[in-house]
Amino acid sequence: MKSFIIILMIFICSSASAKEFETKDNFTLLIPDNWLEIPPYVLREAEAYALKISNGKTVLKYDYGFQLSSAFNWLEYPYIFVQINRDRRIAPREMKDQLQLQDDFNKGIEHVKKNSAETLSNIAKDEFRYDESSNTLWSSYSMHVTNIGQIKGVTGMKLTQFGFIQVNGYAKEEEFEKYAPVFRSLVNDMLIDEEYKYSPKFTDNIPTIFGVDLTKIAVGAVLGAIFTLIARFLQKPKKTETSEDLS
Image (cartoon, rainbow, N blue to C red; front, side):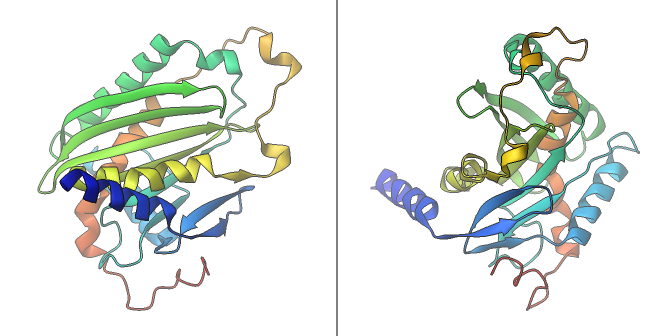
């Protein structure tokens, strides 16, 4: 009976109608009707908090954020952060060295452990795979957040012609299976403008000195789970200024 209820909740969550959220960065996200945009000033508060707890050693940038409309405060679980990287285009072959990629990701986790020990503990990486068919690197992880409990997250890093778009979703462990389809659908159903959509180039087989460093990517993904700790200071107004953005 319990399994049936969980499956039903996942079905309802994943089948809910969605609305288009057109960004200023050449892609559109399909957001469930019962979610809304987190205002930019709240994202700046989150970035400042990350800088503070790491004694200035962790600089993060979140471009967009979303959460349930029904939440009392901003940054209450579940929520989603979107990060955009325009450093350079990543060649397909750079994503094939899974051992090196996982090593870089683990270094990012170690950075978070070292600089956020008072807020995060028991960080563990679960899923880690590159889906060539969708040009997406998937990772999932779990951790214990002080005064909150066990949290799980999933990150989809979708390659583009200018770099990548990274979607990070977080929920309490007991609710994660319910919201994981929402997190993943934001990546899978993302609409990228044609000129920015990832496509083969004749230079893909030419050796490069760069390589993909997932250390910073892992830091931004894992550390995003802690920002609910400042939620009590970020109470939403009864009528939010972002509710019309998604209508």
